[in-house]
Image (cartoon, rainbow, N blue to C red; front, side, top):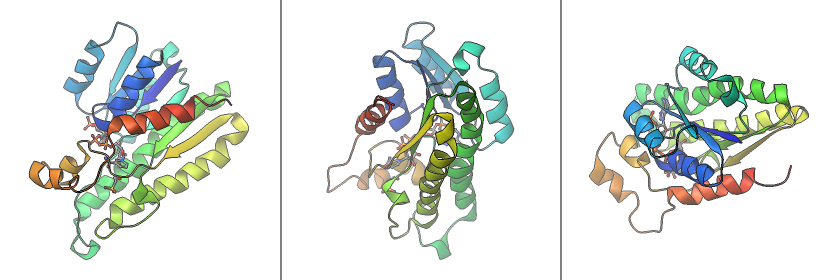
Length: 224
Ligand code: NDP
Ligand code: 8X3
């Protein structure tokens, strides 16, 4: 069986890739950082890991890169739409419109570009399971979260839309909506300010990436 995980170079995506490999899947991971993709691949025996380097925001890169997969790797059983990010934390009227574009292009449009290609492959063989990584931010809105929350609310809506529209093709669609997970997420959000990022996880017990991977694997290992 084959699982494709977007954003497999760190955090939740990497933990999902490792757990699928432990569960005897072959795994495709994607991301923009080629060094990390190569390093991940080198840790596993030949033939079990395939890596693809592309930016989910670029539709033609997404299409070309996915289509470049060897035929046997296109038979994807599970797609985990995980690549995503937050940028900034401020009231919307003080917000940075480039941050808004990046979040919407990555979290919403990127998820759509990848899903369009892969769901057509799944439809053709009448099997598959897509898991979208949403967020508690896609269920509730918090102060200063505005556009990130909106992008994750969009992921929630798209999950429901994809589920309705793919059901007749025997393709299942689920989502996991985590609370705060200690990954590189906050470092990315605060553009490398590690001190600020560390503060996010003070005063409560945060989740770790492996917790989310557990939930994803649980969902995709249920009976049809
Ligand atoms: P990380 O920053 O650790 O990982 C994010 C991953 O997404 C990286 O592998 C990164 O790869 C990839 N990515 C980001 N932008 C792009 C892009 N434009 N094209 C391709 N890949 C991209 O964060 P998390 O593991 O925490 O985040 C994973 C998902 O989980 C996100 O969707 C996030 O919104 C969601 N989430 C996170 C929570 C948290 O508290 N951490 C809670 C709830 C949801 P690269 O940089 O190599 O491209
Ligand atoms: C990430 C979790 O609460 O920091 O989606 O937005 S939160």
